[in-house]
Image 1 (cartoon, helix red, strand yellow):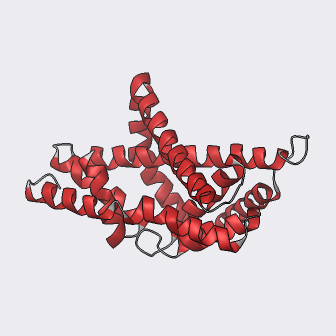
Image 2 (image 1 turned 90 degrees about the vertical axis):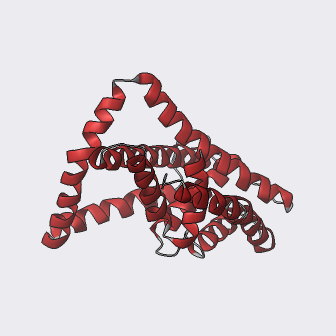
Length: 234
C-alpha cells in the first residue's frame, strides 16, 4: 500500500507509463524477488490493466452508442478507434523496421510475462484479486470524474464519462510529460465537450478531478517515498 501511494509522487517526476512500473519493480526486488520475476510480475500486472482498459472502453463505447438508438450499434468513436488500430497494424506489418521492433518486444513479453500469467491463472483467488482490483481502480476514477462534473452543474451518462476517462487516460499514459500533465487535461476536457458539456463546465470539472486524483496525493506520496527509501525498501 505504501509503495502504491509513493507512486503518486513518482508520477510527478516521470512519465506516467514509466514511473509506476519502475517503482513497483524496484520495490519487489528490494523485497527479495528475483529481478526477472519482479519484471515479469509487474509486466503481468500491466498486461491485466491493459486488457481491462480495452474491455471497459469497448463495453462503455457500445453502451454510449445504444443510449440514443435502440439498436446494438457501436458509437462512431469506437468504430474510428478500431479502424485506426487496424491501419496501425497494417503499417507496422508493412514496414520492416517497425515489424522487427514490435516482434522483438513481443518475444520479450512472451519470454517473461506470459509464463507469469500462466502461473497466476492456476491460482483463481490471485487472478480474481488482480482483475477485481484493476476494475475497481478504474471504476472509482470514473466515479470521481462523474462527481466532479456534477459538482459544476454538468450532467452526462456514466457510460459517456467512462469513455471520456478511458480514452483520456490512454492518451495521458502515452504522453512524455510527467503524469501526463497537459495531455490528460486537454484530452478529458475535449472529450467532455464533445460529449455535450459546455466548456465552462468541462474545464473546471477536469481541473478539479486532476486536483483530487493527481495533485493532492503527491505530498503523502513524497512522504512514503522518502520513508521507504530511507528504510531501504525502494
